[in-house]
Image (cartoon, rainbow, N blue to C red; front, side):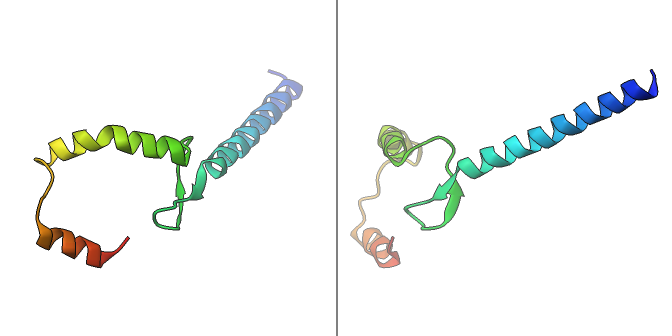
Length: 85
């Protein structure tokens, strides 16, 4: 390869890497939002709050089943209530 061709290849590689890095950074920033449960910033991806609620409602029965059923203990519920949100 000639020097001129090598120079063109390195410029295009540099452009590609810088553009790719910028796009990746923008992708990360756009996926971050404030978690309403904790008030902290977190990566939420492409889910809205409504989508998250629907997912939680759909998966709740599977979660209860996976842990052997709901706990019907007044003492345990009182403890959880004291912990707060």
